[in-house]
Length: 354
Ligand code: SF4
Image (tube, rainbow, N blue to C red; front, side, top):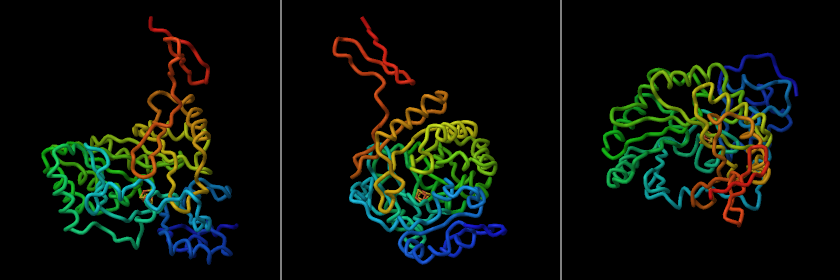
């Protein structure tokens, strides 16, 4: 495939945009139209500019360029892979764990990841913002439950909203006495770093609550200079950052790439938090890999990086039963009153406490 010499000035959304940018083959455009009719597509000019034209398997392109394989169903695909619906007491809210809720305030994103676990509910045509009445109902639910300590704003991508709208929502949540923590799940700093203005950063903070940002990024190249500058604006404003990464075949499924990503997070003052095993979202089987392989890759990454750079490798149990660690248990009883300890290189040591 050849690439035209032209600047990518706008978000790519249609098959012809991806073809025109040299990111998809013209012969496949009709098939891609079937994909984008089913699942929204968007790739910002910033991300398109990070694609290596010489790499036919570029890990940035793979995450955002629609692919005909998304039309294939696999036997274990689930429309709602982590069971949001089963734990939704009202529109926009998911209450899975006692002390925290997810508040899905918008169903749109500046980019659409081809492996998105909420792809059946997220997208340009999926309803936009939560209506004022639905938001008020969700806030009433939170107000009535003093055990809710944390509100996780997600979607969609909440940082796609205007600073004015964000500030209104943040103020309304911060006015609830028992809510002490707000967490924004976002891809904006890496996908559209220009959106991270001082005004936006100020909008997500409020008196009496601590705001955290959980950044979703999957490849070290996403931590480009512009993204690092955007992250620095949160840090300068005192907003702590953690990371979320999805382990994806063809994107980051090797220990070196993951280690480079975790180091890049730490350099940008983002604490590595979760490495997610991919969910069973429809049409994403080409991104999935077996748990055993994921464990081998995660262990290889953990053996390479500093303690500061270690995320937890986790799986959301399908059906909404929560997250569990997939990490290899480093300490196991040896059956004789002691322990068998496995070091980062896989060597086993005995340990006794008596
Ligand atoms: S930014 Fe998040 S919600 Fe939006 S498409 Fe990507 S994974 Fe899905």
